[in-house]
Length: 548
Image (cartoon, rainbow, N blue to C red; front, top):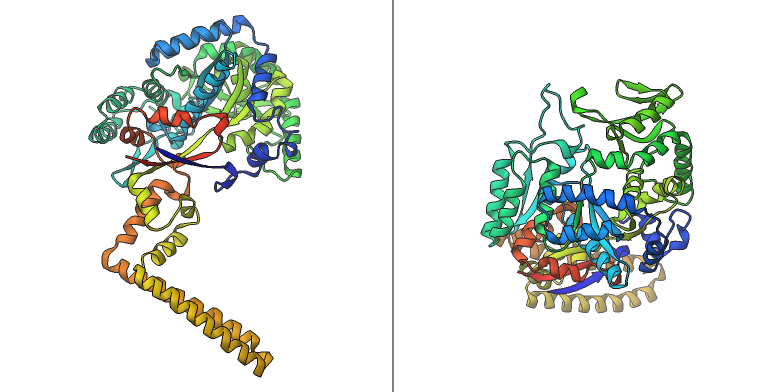
């Protein structure tokens, strides 16, 4: 495989805060505790205070979880290392259908790579993947898009209804079963993988996504199969044992709600003054909690908790301030952290020294940092995940044929179409266009000088005429390209192919396309190849060229 890389600042639609965090840390150092370097990670590892009792407890819980997921001996060995004092390099993602967007895989690869790098440097480290099973946005995870046979294929599961007929979208997705409707699309997807010569991957998919599995358990089993032999530890935060282990930090946040909310409101204003946008909206009524309604006491939904002078509220349920703190302490399994508090709970539970995140995640850590300072008194180093765009042989040939780069696609469909039309003109005719345009430019320049001598006031008219003639000639050249296209429809097919693979729905490939079809075509060495570029020494977005 060939590879070339771009810096994150060269990618489209990157948050300003994220770019300044990477390239101009002095502008954002009041919002973060560490620079995004391995030196910062090593320093955090040396200063980390994490009790052996908690390490042993978390390892025991994760042993049971990972055994259920089907994780192998390498993962169990890493859990032994965790129990014995290894630090953690953590990443995580929503539990999307069939693994979700490709970048979920890339996050895990980066966590594995950084953990290995630390271990080689003498700091024992293990990779952990936090599955966002408590998230209740079902519409985010019940669909995925594959690039297969030159086109996009969309898979989507229906949103199930609860027994009372209500929509279950407000339930944590990790509790929602895939249901009978999953059988057909799992069969279709696994058949595609087999057609591409990947019976093992097809088997892993079928075994993971059985109808009785939940979105969380299916995702976990898929990842356990894909990352077999790499020691990746998976974590499902819905586990009541983890909630009970996190009870001290949950109770502390409940008791300090007013103070924490003031800190978050102030941080939002500070970000705005510095020219950045807060990723998570915080209001005077906000808390950092959701209520997880017990399934035996209601519909099992995840409800936002607000606060006012009368107390705390979630749907029809209310508590006084004292009652709320007591409820969190007594039944921590019924309370879930929001997006800003979740990483703090994560790093209370885990000896995290580095977190691998995307641009938006790293941006909202600028808000979470006030919670880290007040509740945990430490914070891991935020490192950006490596990004990839995979370019197959056909796409590479088309890019070369039309003298395009992947970046040209980022300029939009209309600009790409114009480029293809100009490039589709036969070489001889194109050369003639160029020669005629050069001759015409020289002729107009000579005429212009003579006309200006005759009447200087005509200089503007001469310039206007030159622009119009040049524009019309270029327009004629593009029309010639379109005429050829109408005969063969080749350009339309080529444009659709390139956009579907390299810039689907005007977004980076890694954000829109599932990784499984790529893995099946490249073969078992795909993860090894991508692992080479998943390193803090090679931060950026990598174009992997000419895979099969």
